[in-house]
Amino acid sequence: MSELDRIPVVAEQARDDTQCSPLGLPASVNPILQEIRYALERLIANGEEHRIDLSALPCGPADLERLTELLGTGEVQARVEALGPTLIQETAVPGVWFVDYQDAPARRLVRHIEIALVPQMLRPQPQDLEAAITLLDARCEQETSGSPPQSREA
Amino acid sequence: MAAPTTLGENLRAQGVSRRGFLKLCAATASMLALPPSMVPRIAHALEATRRPSVIWLSFQECTGCTESLTRSQAPTLDELILDLISLDYHHTLQAAAGEAAELARHQAMEANPGQYLVIVDGSIPGPDANPGFSTIAGHSNYDILMETVANAAAVIAVGSCAAFGGLPAADPNPTGARSVMDLVADKPVVNISGCPPIPMVITGVLVHFLTFGRLPELDEYRRPMAFYGQSIHDRCYRRPFYDRGLFANTFEDEGARKGWCLFRLGCKGPTTYNACATAHWNAGTSWPIQSGHPCLGCSEPSFWDGGGFYEPLSVPTTATATTLLAAAAAGAVVGGATTARAKKQTRNLVAERQPVTVEELEKKL
Ligand code: SF4
Image (cartoon, rainbow over all chains, first blue to last red; front, side, top):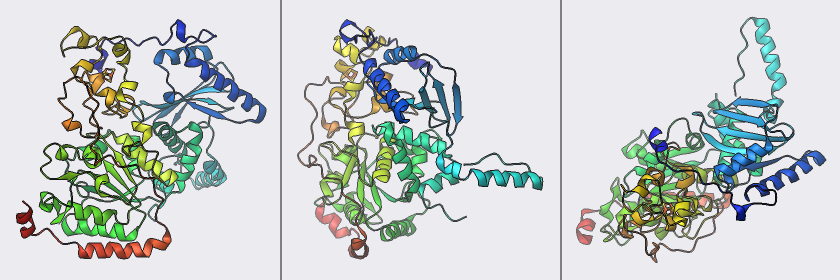
């Protein structure tokens, strides 16, 4: 809403001298980094995945910006279209991903940090995978019978 | 094709893919303040759950609560979640009218004894009040409420009128209006207060019930902690101005223009518990304080009697003795052994209930 933009409120910087962690980061960011580090150890050791709900954390926009900056940008970007877009961005740290779930008008629903080899949203869902061979056969049959293959429905 | 029976089948039939469903579950877990590790459990439970029967009763109300839920912009998660229930009776929304409508309610009660949910909006003239103040098909609100909740699994009081009495119960309370929890003692009752309540909270409670088979953790007023656990003030983006003593003193002064704290303009945020600051209104566009208006405290008991809306807060608003009942533990769904008895009880209640008579109206006026 353009009217709202005219309210001259400046986002407060959460960072000040008393709130800084030993790493020089906002106090709220340090525990998230520790959680990511611990989750990475478990992912490497036994493949265990982990997710952090960023909307549930007491972080201001400035804190999240610092966290995003620190984790950097990796090589993979993906977009899933299912009930609106989900934007997936690999960070510069392998195995650490930002997953931004949005609704149909592209408003953010929730943003996760996912520590996994491949984010869950990108993988086929197990029940869909079970039906994969039947689906392939049906598509081949349609092809041989001359009718164009249907795009995959839910 | 046979009618879908589970929520998963219902969603598939609507073209919602499993990835879409996963997203719905991720957003739901976040809104219920559950850890993201619960997402697979929510997905699994919702996939396999049968659509529950819901009976929605409207009593002394303005229909704002129904508007809140149904006027959200399409397609929203709230709507999708609402598709997960079988809304068998809602006299504002249903096509059936008159006897056919009442028949639908009785059929839903008989077909799902001990398993259906009752949603109530509006307050109820209590058992001692003139029953003629509010009737449906000639029967008093009180009789209809008691008959309908008798075999319900749980009751969800939607809006401040159902939760605390609301506007009808404001001084001098001419209709003897009472809240649902004042009247329903033997069923789990959850209050979703607000005038109107946030749609996402209504759907969040439904999802929690469907996923875990019980109501979510409640506060002392039986409101879900996930949404009412923190005050508006604690989550308000104007809070840094409050902390620094920077206040708007009028709606036109420099403080108002600069977006400073609205405490001196009567903001009830410090004593009000609700999720407006995070959930926002009108498809996430804004919320009262972001629009420059102080919080009225509409989700708190007796907010209509809490003094002027624009008077700065001096004393916290509190509940009346009758509304402050001890929060009952959320009950489990009534088991199969009681089903037959429950069915019989429903029939008896319906048979025994008498319409309000002219003599009764005259006597108690
Ligand atoms: S505007 Fe209201 S809720 Fe926000 S900081 Fe001021 S008093 Fe608290």
